[in-house]
Length: 380
Image 1 (spheres, rainbow, N blue to C red):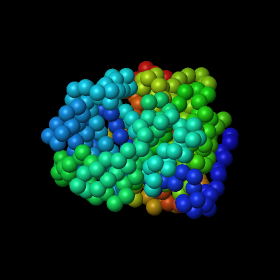
Image 2 (cartoon, helix red, strand yellow):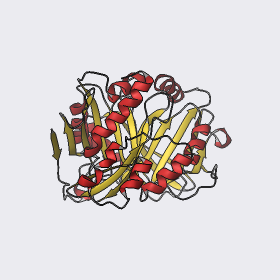
Image 3 (cartoon, one colour):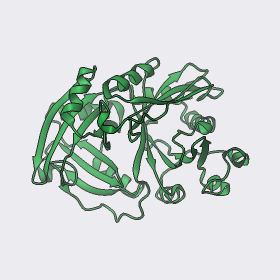
């Protein structure tokens, strides 16, 4: 069993070769953006803040922008494809189902970031260009990563609009209640067998990210399936990208299942940071969100090795929330089931108290829960 932790570099942001400010947006290509926006408004408690569609000049696509704290989801569907972009989006949904096409990152200088990335081996998708409206100017550029996923580099400067030029302010679909989460904690990508280290090198070289943790061997394994995972992050640890690949085992792992039904590499799940996981889970369950189940036996000895947490063990048991502790503190976490019919994209809710880990102590219980769902679907 091997876990390697790499210390956070004390390099100032301005000395980083590829400085970032944080996640700008998680952009989804979906079959019906209006209905998806309603789902994330009601089930996730997010607030619709901006819209782009035929009513304000976008004849080809409709996009809804939802926010919760610093979390921003952009949901885009095609009305009628007439350009290469529209045809790409239509084809993406047909091949992959609803999924993440862009993990957009806010940077202080999009031109410099794009130039650095290309100099260090990135595949350029969209060269730096300015977009403007009455609220100011934004500089955008895009590079490719695993599968058909991209990173748009967003330089906002003093832009004051609701999202980007071309988007109009929108009223909430439903009255937002108490905020359920406030930041993107990390975004997980699944890649093919043998490709994890290649993409780790990509983030090391192209974006100057460092290796934060890795889980190999018996770390993420059950009797039937296994996977390997390494985590890369920027110097400030605001942007964290775990990368998973399947490992050879007796049966099909969750990564194998994802790759089969997504049709290749892509974003597996988005972890959302919450200050009150109990209230979040209660509200999301009440709104119809389904979470993975955890056997009662997990909680029988939990207090012995996790110790005291903000939430009593009996409440964790009731809500099926997992807990883990390391040398820096503890965390509480829970995972949704896939949020679409294909067993692909899902979400994690995480509440951190010092720990910067990813729930290593929960891996066996979590993966057994996932295997039970795979077996129900006939995909184990």
